[in-house]
Length: 135
Ligand SMILES: [Zn+2]
Image (cartoon, rainbow, N blue to C red):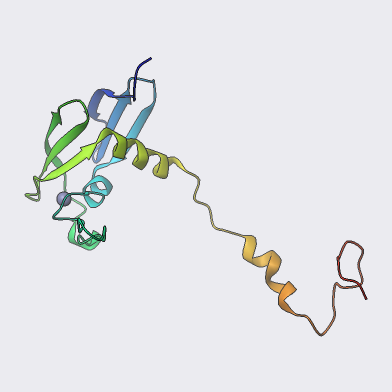
């Protein structure tokens, strides 16, 4: 084992899905439209501030990778059907995107449980054991 995982296979796995198989056995499916929107090139993201210049709405749902070319042993350069050709997706970045995509993103339910604790006066709940307040 040496260094970081690299793609061993990249292919279109669906109408708008790109499948990348990695040298460590991981397989990820990427939505190509999301990929296009995640472009980190100087035209899409401000190099100084890191602010995204590209607005997701500027990318149509029908955008597709036209050609995908490997750059060295660290990235892919993608030519998109919308004419964008300066996007470089490093393997590191793709792995990071895969993590975000695969991470559970359910709705946060913590707000419901702590909403009532803000009330200091008016009682309710303070008499129970384990409350922690001394009175
Ligand atoms: Zn770009």
